[in-house]
Image (tube, rainbow, N blue to C red; front, side, top):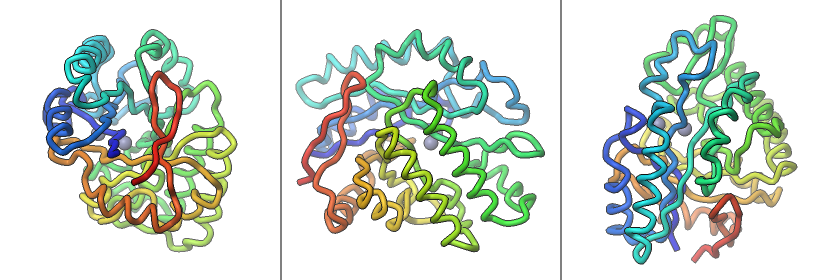
Amino acid sequence: MIEDWHTHNKLCRHAKGKVEDYIKYAIEKGIDTIGISDHFPYEFYDELEGIPYEEYGMKVEEMSKYLSIIQKLKKKYKKKINVRSAFEIDFIPNQVNKLNRILNNVKNELDYILGSIHILFTERGPWCFDDSRFLDEFNQYEKVDDVYIDYYDSIIEMVNTQAFDCDIVSHLDLPKKFNKFPENPDTIMDKVLDVLKAVKKRDLVIEINTSGFRKEVKEQYPSIDIIKKSYELDIPILLSSDAHNPKDIAYRFDTMIKTLKNIGFTKLAHFKNRKRTFIDIE
Ligand SMILES: [Zn+2]
Ligand SMILES: [Zn+2]
């Protein structure tokens, strides 16, 4: 069984291809389950000055179209592949009520939710740290470590905020995307352990996201060390490509599965109607 739980499409304005293109490609590749998890809208949030969110996610008015396309394709390809409907949602501190007002209308149509942090709220304003156009902001911090600490504090807040509904924590060590690594990795790893404990306590899943192989960092998110710690803590995982182009579906899953088996994993999480089950790693 090969399942890819994180894919985008052109509705978010920075991915290529229609939802159906991704499903067709996944069938061609012999994938058993594809999760359609495009970026949730941002337009209803306050305090996102300077963030080009029109290029980061669909509009609120497009949500029902997105979900009905997935429903139709679920039926159309039922015999060939499991299609699951989802959103990748940013945790924006102190604005979860605004999110829920919109999310609650569509929640019953979702199979799962990915929780992500792409934006840090700095003294200088909001910063999308994984957008290469704003890379300069790394230099405004005294140390790279401070970026990691701010990031992991946000992840901990996301995980501990019960009102923020999610099933899976996305790309857990995303700040390494442009090869910016902590100066004191042990200090940052202590912080990661706090994150993992919070994830375990809330019983969430961590995704093993292979999109990092396509970025400067040239490795999956999160690092092997973090994956091993997740294994020790018995935190469930699943695989995702974070494809923004149909050809990237299940990107490097073969080698990733071997790595996960070597670490000791025997199962991967699976979602349907917000219920979690497991499949065996073959
Ligand atoms: Zn994206
Ligand atoms: Zn993301």
